[in-house]
Image (cartoon, rainbow, N blue to C red; front, top):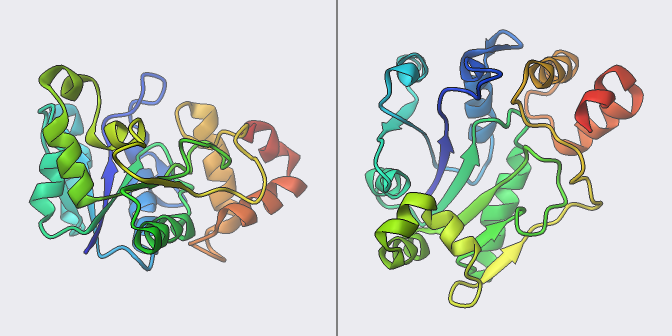
Length: 232
């Protein structure tokens, strides 16, 4: 089973209600869930958030729509989420500031993990995609080994996924790369201006193709300087 975990919490100081901000008629967090579900390789999606009251509206919204939510505040929360999912072969980690996550990138990461049997696959160690399109996929077995190998101090400062990323020797790794280097672009939503950019792209593209990919966004930006100036 392939499990995708979307880590989400109350937004950054400049955009505290980011997760619930409207994006083409739906909360931003829901647009992310929709896109992750479009990945053909993903069997289950879980949104992981905290137990803090500030994250209650996020959890309530998702649960009311039948979306699995895992809530935990411990330093082992990521692995607890993996364990709660049960039976995962590969775990995909995604972040909640990324409404442009490309389902095809998720599928590529999973396919690479399966074909190469790498413990960890990502487009993070050698970035070539715009920021906000980060994908990490790791075998559940390797994550368990990483979690058991981390001492208390390391666990408080890192996650098993990051632990794998920084230890290529015992954990074989693969990288997925874009056709060109677009890593100077930033499509994350962290400020009101970022949200305005996301809304502009969604307004232009979502109705025609809800699963629009990175190449389609780039083509749009080539003809829309009003949007392109926010993407760099």
